[in-house]
Length: 108
Length: 234
Image (cartoon, rainbow over the protein chains, first blue to last red):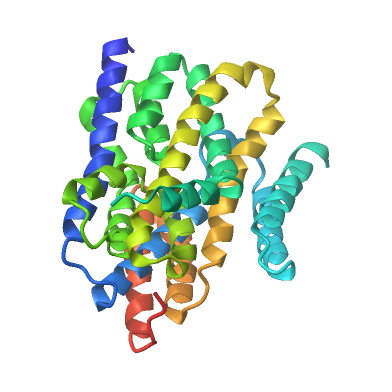
């Protein structure tokens, strides 16, 4: 892999990514926050994000694939439980979930 | 006119959990690039210009495997396609009464899941003409931290234990999950989220490359049409 090819690859990846953003700006030109299309697109956006989260937690690649499914699923449930028990405390939820994840994988 | 106080408030919002959530993953990405043989400047350039982690990982993997530029373009486009509906959704929220178009094309570079969720969490409390600068501060700071953390991850990964790196990778999806939970207000959103996750698990077994997009599109469409008559809540 030559340096030139890597920089070209970064340029191509940035172009592909910016295309999604730039075309999004263009498409939103006349869109009002009161229109049904706006709310439909919000539903699609959150649907895609929840699909991404499910994929990362259940079918991870890279470093997370070296961890056990049970640790990822248990830690996810901990995050959800802590979030609702402790009055929607984001920091505590993320911290305790990550701590559970590390504990199950490396210390139990 | 640019309001520095709104920009500053956006930056202050980003400091803390949002920056930690995103920064930890970017740190791991920097460490991953180093272990894969990339240079420091290549790592910096990747986050500086692309700033969309899943697509950056895909790009790096394809390079390592010896793929072509066309492979990279199509794979990154598919992976980062979620940014399209997110941008369409965000722009009307932050629209300013007299800002020129180019400013929206500029700020679009900073749109990513963390900034998107955080903006939606607070936008109702902000005056319409302050929202653009607030988002610019929020998302711009997250972009800045991401670039910084990628470089830091590249430079100090040798001194960080494997366990800590694995923990860092896990922070980001869990943070996304918790931010998703904070959106569980309207029935159509709850339905879209639950169906999106369920469809993703099922479709991954059949069409892994397209599972996320098809799941999100179908889940959002079903959620929206079932509860179409529900009162809109922003």
